[in-house]
Image (cartoon, rainbow, N blue to C red; front, side, top):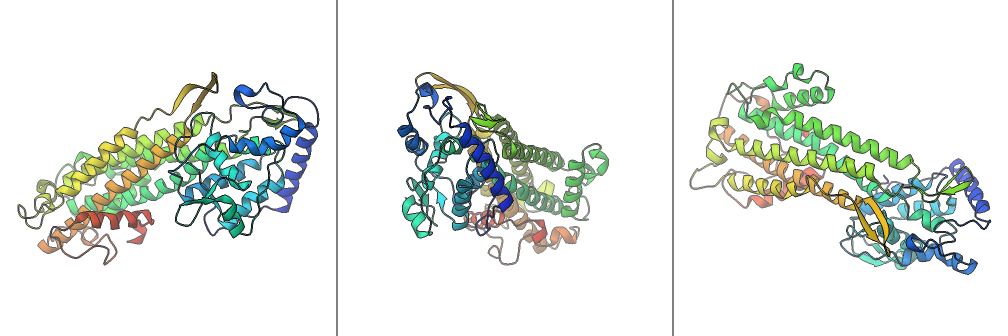
Length: 474
């Protein structure tokens, strides 16, 4: 996906290929055959033929009547990802769009003109409703997002960037509304976020195991026969734990199952990335131009991506549950050998008990998203049948799981930090140098272990995690 500051360049050879495929489409449209969404209405009105005058306006008006969403909008980075995915899929010759349309999308990305795309209320019929908002920006109507994420008039945003609106030509409007580039772009961002979170969980969970002196038995490579993901993750957890002595015969269950829970997440994110690749290179247009003819398709369904998003969401919820359980064990002096609730003055100060309560509340909320109903049948457009997946809802559920896991991990990270400070104060020689080392950069949190408004600390840690901090930054 195109990140802000990265220029998008379309090579001359690619533009020539687009021009050739576009010429074939224009020639095929010269006849009298009905072509869905080009010389006919859409949905239940597909039986209505449009005259030449109506056809000249139709590709633009497709956007106007379908831009029915409103705030909350996608974040700027999310909307850019949608635009970048749309550009990538329009490069397929089956879309039949002109090189000029693709160049216009590249110009929007390079000028950082970001469409205001509704995050919710996408309804049925694929992603037509949110994509209509993105398409409306190209023709100078609709809204764009300013640097603060507020919606402004698209015409003004284009003018400020030195760009001019451009009308959609024959078939370009219907092509712009087809497929699932929205979920595709959002899935790319989500997958990258999860990859970072996996490294962060390894760093924090490993440190938790080190500070408690948890047994290293479950991390032995023999337990990962036939599972290279688990072998790699356990090895990383072992390094993060350090070489300190073991305090008990058995580590708490939550510590023992951290590796397998991480392996499930890694496999799920790989499955999502594979679904993204299929979506980016597949034929998702309807009608698609294939072998000189136009064919209808089910490319709007997005079932593959939605199923992968759902699996990853469930895996992340489980990983958060395990993290909250590890945090709970950190409050137990029988596990850590430290004061109850990691309080520097038990009874007078609460220590980390409130922090754990926050984590438990976050996990409870996350469980609502573990089994989202994202595929179904609805009747729309005067009885027209719509059977599809709900991609934007799937992306929202996945985003909630990512944010929730990050929140729980920040709680555990704060508790590990508190445990390390208490360990150092008690001069517990049995702890390894790795466990004693501060996991956080110096000055990240206020000094001391006394009670304070720990919510502010958690805000700091969440921002740190969101910025990409991981074990490599230690």
